Length: 383
Ligand code: GLA
Image (cartoon, rainbow, N blue to C red; front, side, top):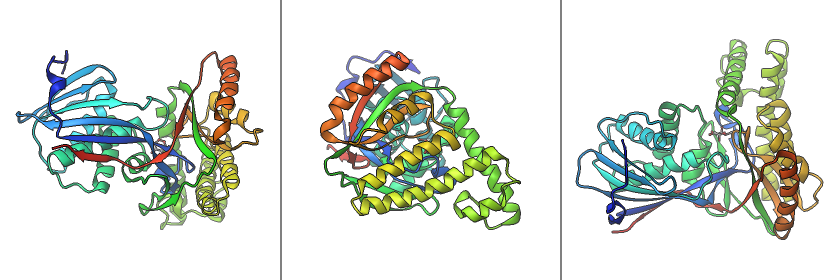
């Protein structure tokens, strides 16, 4: 239920504060739901929650400062809302309920510095931050991994988006100044120091988000799963593309149609690139890491076909600049940001140049976000 925000609501005394980050992904795109490798990190741009119990059994009172919207929910009767941001939170409540954990009424104020539709996963930040806050406030006894998984389930089951686990994992588990190499099959991870020296990570937001994104995301997933089903008939031990080698895939050339075949090949290649990027970063070879970013983009553009002309324009524009090591689309695709590994003192001039060219080409301005790999969710007890 939506009401006007009561005058005194914002004056409640918060018991806890949560800082819940967005995420970047250096490399490893559309590999998470194929049980492959990804290399994300949380960033220094976040959603903040202030939360306290109230004296009711079932009333959640939530105010989004970002949307200047106040809502009240009956915790015993959770229903989908037409306001999309609410569903990420409602989904979390629903999944906590399913775990048989109970809690009582609460007040919550939310403030976000994450742009929506930019591909930096404001949705995972909302889910994981709220789940982490409820966990602390009501002593639910959930582990970090429980929070990651229930937040992903909230998105799959309640919001209805069939995402993988990368975004939630990065938002919760990240470590300042590190990338995570996550194996989405075993869910084991290692931290890789983000020693960027005089380089920085610059996101350039196309400021478009084509509405193909959701349907095409699900189609890609399905194409990969259907291909795995074909392979499984001859190799019953195969349960995802992770167990498929290049040689094995080659055997199915005529049996899997050309389009799904190239999707699979892309996934296998991208997994290899993540491992190669890990090696490059460990060898302090940022130039090699950057080349792998370009190769990732070209795979996403031509084989996985989830890019768009705005993203391609930004990547093409960067390619002959010797002070940019790498550039690629980031996240699900069809809009959102590119991630660029660029010399720090060139950012200002480069952005001015690319902004002017992009605006001319698309009659729309891009925006820039400089990001630093940062800590996952931080929950602070205030009293
Ligand atoms: C979205 C999804 C992730 C992942 C990426 C593509 O961000 O939420 O799970 O699949 O797309 O890599």
